[in-house]
Amino acid sequence: MMLILMSESTTIDDQERMVISRLRKEREKSRLSQLDLALKAGVSQTMVNYIENGARTPTLGTLIKLCNALGISPAVLFEVDDDERAEMKSRLIEIINRYF
Image 1 (cartoon, rainbow, N blue to C red):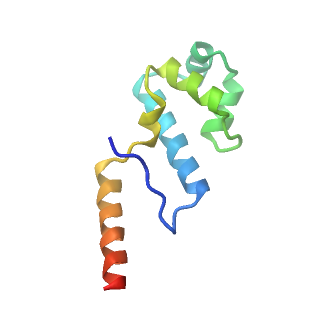
Image 2 (cartoon, helix red, strand yellow; image 1 turned 45 degrees about the horizontal axis):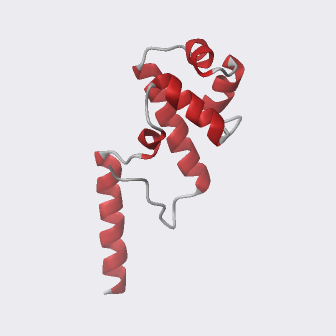
């Protein structure tokens, strides 16, 4: 498992959007509605909606509740997929070439 690495062009907001996007994908993959997830996690459906739409940032406790309800480790939300890995490799090569 590789975790997300922040580059100089990646902001906290970008990271947050990536994690929330993955949370939504995991919910959809589990075939749960926002209401189903909220009930399983013990949070309001409105909160799940706000989180998925970027209106609210979940606390660590809420994020853990949502992950537990989905049956996933919170680390899943921070993993890097093959496309992101290729992009990071390209960025690293670009940075190395810049200095040599």
